Amino acid sequence: MAEGAAAAAAVEGQRGSSSTPPAAAAAEVGRPAVVLVCGSLVYYHCAYRDSSLLSLASDVVIVLLCSLAILGMLFRQMNISVPVDPLEWQISQDTANSIAACLANTIGAAESVLRVAATGHDKRLFFKVVVILYTLSALGRVASGATIAYAGLCSFCLYVFAQSSPPINKLTSQLSMRRDSTGGAQDSS
Figure 1 (cartoon, rainbow, N blue to C red):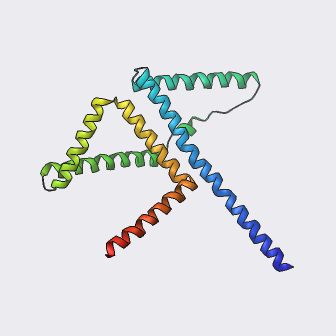
Figure 2 (cartoon, rainbow, N blue to C red; figure 1 turned 90 degrees about the horizontal axis):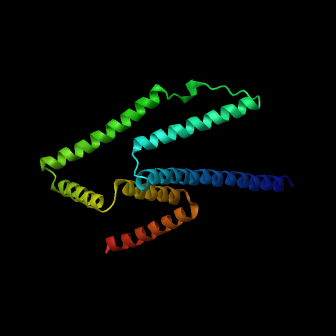
Figure 3 (cartoon, rainbow, N blue to C red; figure 1 turned 135 degrees about the horizontal axis):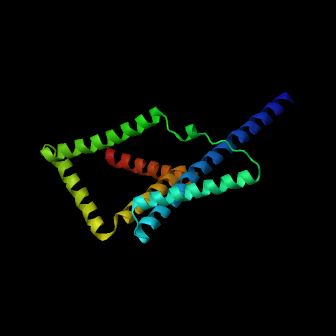
């Protein structure tokens, strides 16, 4: 009987542990959805309304200010005190340093690639850079920058969604295993 209780507890423990990954997966699916909605709003503001990013930032600040003012008046009317601590709105020095370091590393890597390509030592890299820059130039003539950025954002969100979705992740792993097994057979012959 003790063995039966231990087995039931083990099965129940497995059920309990399997219930947390779907919640985490749902959170991972929610992030790309929020990014996609925000990106859609930015795209609408910049592409369809022909407004600048400065206008977008101003509109966002105005909406936030009005929303906070309305909530403040509502809380005051209902006699609810909500302390506002401005220190919560500040980022730490470490976060600011890591953002600046990431930006500096990205710019430095791009500068390094362009320097190597410009010297002519690596012909393959030179042609890759030329093809990519020409493709971006052609895309810029066909579509606006906001449209291209929005298409990239949509592609990125679909990629993140596919990585966090268990059925799609399982399918891609099966396809990669199938490709590896056929590729290995071709390599050995």
